[in-house]
Image (cartoon, rainbow, N blue to C red; front, side):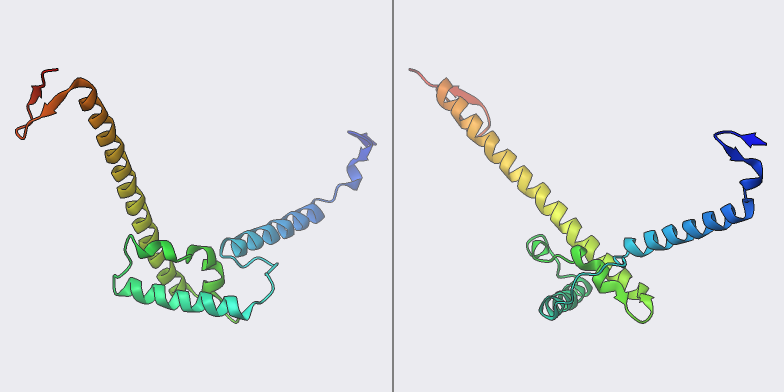
Amino acid sequence: ESWGRGRRIEDNDDDEEETQSVASKNTSVSVRRRSSFGLSCKSPPFNPVEQLRITEMYKTVIQMSAENKLNEKNSWNYDLIDHMGKLIKDESRGVNFQKASCTIDASVKIYSNRVDDTYASSHRILESLSRNGQSKTDENDGDTQNADGTTKKNKK
């Protein structure tokens, strides 16, 4: 007996479909979880010089974070978040969650300092533009500002 587009009801195997569905879900979930921690199946070629630089940078940042020495000026010198996946992975045991928590804590401090620095820089630029615009207006009016904040009209 026919059903749909040439498929027959007898051809449908529910147990096999369920097994395939579960297998595909388990595979996609495990890959998704691993890739979120930088543990994807494809890894870049091992570069010992770069690995040494990243390890030294990590040690420095964690020490500075513990001593509360990360600030707006030096936070721009560290690219910890870019290498987080490489740093928290332990080949023999998977993800090292203690190292991950320290890395996240230091990253939060770095980026909060970057946000603060960006905010302060934006306001300095805005104030500078405002002062330049106001001084040009004052020159055009011929007025002068007294120390008490009142404006005095100059005679032309």
